[in-house]
Amino acid sequence: MKEEITIAGMKVGLRLLGKGELKGIPIDAALGYHFYEAQFRGYPFLLLEARSQRKLSPLQYFRLAGHIQTIKGLPCVFLFQSLPTYERNRLIERGVYFVAGEKYVFLPFLLVNAREGKAVKTDKLLPAAQYLLLHHLQVRDLSGESLMTLEQILPYKYVTLSRAVRQSEAMGLLESHAGAAREKILHFPLNKERLWNDAEPLMQNPVKVVHFADEKPDGGLLGGINALAHYSSLNPEDCPAYAISEEQFRRLRKEGRLQGLNPIEGNVKIEVWKYPPIPMGQQAGLKVVDKLSLYLTLKDEQDPRVEKELEHLMQTIWSKD
Image (cartoon, rainbow, N blue to C red; front, side):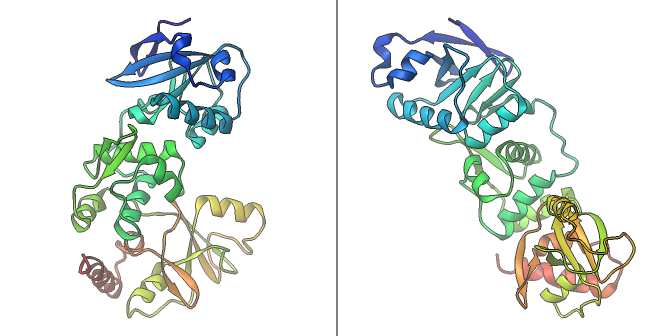
C-alpha cells in the first residue's frame, strides 16, 4: 500500500479506497488493482496500482480506464514502477494516462508531462509548432480543439504536439486552458494576419535539403518557382520542384523509388521538408504546397519578379480576412 507518489517533483498524497467505494467496478479490476484517490493542483483523479506483474494491452487499459471513469466520474491513471520507451509511447498513442516511477508522467488532463521538463527554446519554432500554426492559418481554425483532437487532425503524435503547443505558448502565439475533462484546449487570441506577422520571424525555411532525380517522387507536392507560378502570373521553370517530408524521402529512397537521385542535376528537384508539406492548391491534378510555406521557401530569392509575385501572393491571403 502507498501513502504518496511524486508527480513533477511534487509529493501527492494517496487515499486507499475501501471495498464499499468500489461498487460498480468490474470484479476483475477490483481484485486486480489497489484503487487510490488523489489530487494534484486541485484536480482529483483515481490511481490504479496493479496487485500483480501482469500487464494489459494499451487498448485494454484504455477501455478499462474509460469504464471506471464513467462509473466514478474521475480520470483514471495507472501506476507503474517503470516502463520501457516503446510501452510508454504505445500508451500515449492510445491516450492511456499513467505515472511510471518519478521520471515519466502522462497526465494531459492535469496539463503535466514530466518528459518536457527542459527549458523551452523560443528562438525558432519547432517544425511541428510551425506546422500547427500554418494549418490553423490556412486549413482549419484550431481554436477550441484539444490536444487529443489535434492528434487526429495533424500528422504528429501527442507528445510532439504537446511540445509544440508548449513552445507556441511560451512565444505568445497561442494560449490554452483546461477543458471540462481537464484536457488542454487551444485558444488563439490574435487574428490570423497578426498571428502570421508575429510568427513569421520565428519560422524556419521548411526545406532541409534539395536533391535532383529523373522523375517526380510519389506523393510529392509541387513547390518552388512552379508552385508560385500556379498561384501567380509567373512563368514556370523547366525543372520543377517537388516537396516531400523527411519520412517520405527515407521511405522512397529505401524502396529504390528515386531514380537518378543526386545532389547536382536532374529532370526534377526534390525538396525534403522539415515538416509534411500541406497541400492547398491543385494544378492539372497535381497538388501544390501551401502559400505560406511557399513564401518561406522563396522569400530570400533575389529575382525581382519572384519578389513581386510573392508580395502579391501575400496580399491575396490577408485580403480575405
